[in-house]
Image (cartoon, rainbow, N blue to C red; front, side, top):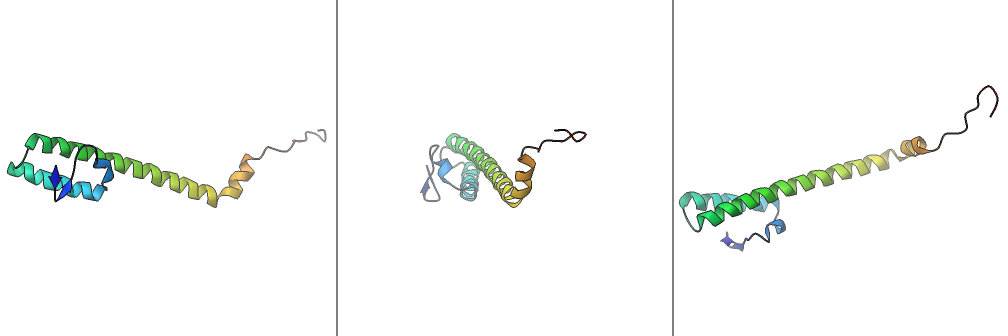
Length: 96
């Protein structure tokens, strides 16, 4: 299906950014409101676009969290390394 001069189909939705998908979804919503084109196909595509936007948003949140954890690990490596070292033998009453 051509939307705003670009080919959009079920297989290539993951190739588009969230911003582009929102613009495409807005155009499709306008077309459905006007009754232009194959309304049932456009509604299906709008739902698939919504799912793809949600998927991309979740993936971005996961990647952002992983990046923050990595930066914290690097920043606090000396403390983390000390905490993970085995304990020295503890002496009780002067005996080993």
